[in-house]
Amino acid sequence: MREFTVPPMAAAPLVGGLADVVFDHAEEDPDRVALGRKDASGQWRDVTAAAFRDEVLALAKGLIAHGVRFGDRVALMSRTRYEWTLFDLALWAVGAQSVPVYPTSSAEQVLWMLHDAEVSAVMVEHEDHAMTIASVIDRLPGLKRLWQLDAGAVSELVGAGADVEDEVVHRHRRAVTPESVATVIYTSGTTGRPKGCVLTHANFMFETDTMVARWRSVFRSRPGDEAATLLFLPLAHVFGRMVEIAAIRGRVKLGHQPELSARALMPDLMSFRPTFILAVPYIFEKVFDAARRKAEAEGRIGPFDKAVDIAVKYAEALEARAFGTGPGPSAGLRMQHQFFDKVVYKKVRDAMGGRIRHAMSGGSGMERRLGLFFGGAGVTVYEGYGLTESTAAATANPPERTRYGTVGLPIPGTTVHIAEDGEVWVHGGNVFGGYLGDPQATDAVLREGWLATGDLGSLDEDGYLTITGRKKEILVTSGGKSVSPTGLEERVRAHPLVAQCIVVGNDRPYIAALVTVDLESVDHWLAMQGRAPLKPEELVRDPDLEMEVRRAVVAANTAVSQAESIRTFRILAHPFSEEHGLLTPSLKLKRRAIETAYAAEVDALYR
Image 1 (cartoon, one colour):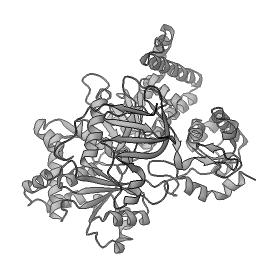
Image 2 (cartoon, one colour):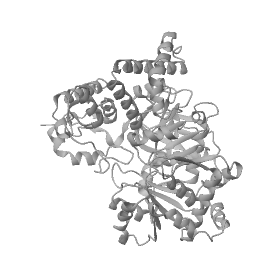
Image 3 (spheres, rainbow, N blue to C red):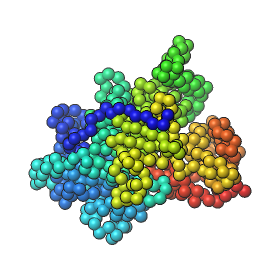
Image 4 (cartoon, rainbow, N blue to C red):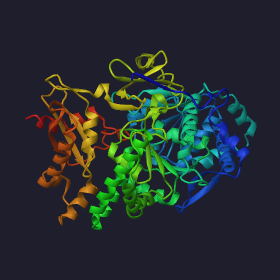
């Protein structure tokens, strides 16, 4: 199949902007809990629709008092926290445009984005961010204001706006139309300089209203449950912004967690108890790995692995029944599943707060078996696919017919087309209008309303999309063999001891790989063998660890031809990190940067 369309579910907006729902919801149901917010003691406190409306209005008046006007661009540089959402809605209430900046951005990256977007003001989280701005401020003559959250920025602005009439904000808000620019989000820059994606209020309305309408059944685990989600994705990334806006528009209680790490996240999942989450595969991998380590430490690894096999078979049987290719789980399989639900699966769900029965995953590919495990364990993960340029999701698996290992169908109102060279093209109301001030780059990706994604993929007979790689990341060996590295890397990473894998081989005689290990998993693995922890430099020379990684490589190679297989690999002492410029903030590998940083190690693979 070359093209597939799903009819729209959400009507195109005719008037208004994203801030309107804050005021509408407060008018319709002022006492509904709209957000959860942590207080100074770490306890979650409810924020009603009316209280949030009042905060947005007060902050909007402060922005006006500080000179922010309709159409101005204001940068937000912070981790994911309540105040980011507050600033977003306040800026949109006065017709301003937010420009997200990753909190880990370097001074030169900040300079480029703030200069390119011509921002007039910046909100930062803490003093380190303020110092980053200060280091380049002499080259930003248009920057007039700097507010620091941890230095009382919200109180300062609210106080400044106390004498501004409410009607001044409402006049600004009523002037916002769906075609108005809502935000300029800079691409994460896996290659080249980041480009500013211009996204309108209409783009986000179409995207979020479609997601809320089509996936409404996933919000509540049980009838009567209050829909709630904990947002821990970076709000500087389009996926996080989509979650934020969808929760506000869909009347879903929204909480914020600032760290995208399993260690920091798990306690907040337990205390906030969301009904569903939206995450990247990394989170689901960490939940699974932690459960498996715990079982092994308690001497129950055999039953746990058996439970995993049963969960996978159970989910496969449900999948086959949904697509009319099987009768569903047999009586024996149902009995085994029921037994393990009490002794294994419930503990996995409890570790995620206890109320989650559904989740969505994006940002990168999820290994099919991992998705099947969670589905069989009672948490169906709907994998999707999208880009900043498509305002997040362009495809996603539907609730009633999830095909694990694919990124699903086009979201309603969207068409996916596979070009002659295998490139995925997308058309719909979520497709952006272009890059800020860069018509040449815009023309390179927009073809008469179609977004040429740069990703390679295929559509099956039912219209489900599978991503096979990126055009720019295809490796061509010196023997002329084209290899997509993504699938190989994901299969190697499926091993519990492996953290990251990057496949190399462009203009080389064969394919090879650099591998990093998960230090927490390795420490556990060593302890189970009665061995003391090793230093990172010792790990790279450990023959037993090398054998484990070799098993992962051999398993990955079974899915490809000999010419595409990984011939050799090297274990690195330290993982690739965002701090060293080797990962994007959404945890994607920066291939060029990694190959440059580890040029000597890559060369050694071919000696």
